[in-house]
Length: 283
DNA sequence: ATTAATGTTCAGAA
DNA sequence: TTTCTGAACATTAA
Image 1: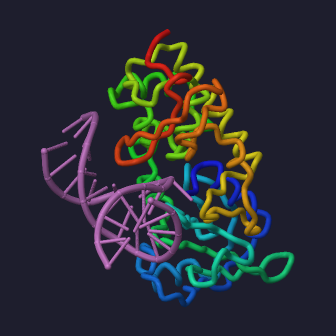
Image 2: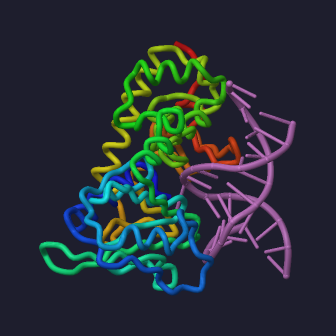
């Protein structure tokens, strides 16, 4: 599910081993699944990547970026079930790619594991990268967004605030799980039109966004029931134990201790909220 | 045995 | 222009 905290956890785990290392080989693991989407074509991508150094590993919203010594950037999009790992893996059969690296500490591999196979890998030169992820394509990172950017973005749309939160052009990095958590802690009804939220609510929400995501990073992300998400060492995250509404429908709200959490569907995705604690627009 | 649901993104239609 | 729908894929629960 990698959302911002999970991807941040991945790059923190990978970085010390990848930074400064040379990509000796990039190979496809042999698994029976349909191959992940790669661009440009595999042979070309592999050729351009092999022999370069990884200067830095960074996070771009929910994507991982390898900044290469060639100036190219290799962008990995985990989508629903993708993971970067240093060792092990939840299962052998969904290993997709291996980078064999040579660094100061000797040889080491990084693996891309992806059960559903919706993840992608793309290589961009500097110009292509700037175009693909320019401001018209992706909004400010959720951890760096200013309040005025947030206020302006909300004023611009009448979509439900939950749906708007998932729009990566509004704010980049928040996904379905953290959207529900953020709205609960902010005390906002997920169905409320974004442009009807009063400035005080928006300010509160802007603070909660950063607070929830930073806290989740400290816990190394959320590992859900199916155990798909793991950190770089194939261990569980811990933030799932802090969830107040996500996947808790039918259970009593932890905040008011009275009302059961409800599940509704918005934009074909589940939203979880407490109808008592999360009220519409007011104030 | 079907069907619906699962963390994301994007093309194409309304 | 903005917003909505469905598809990409594999697996599990109902």
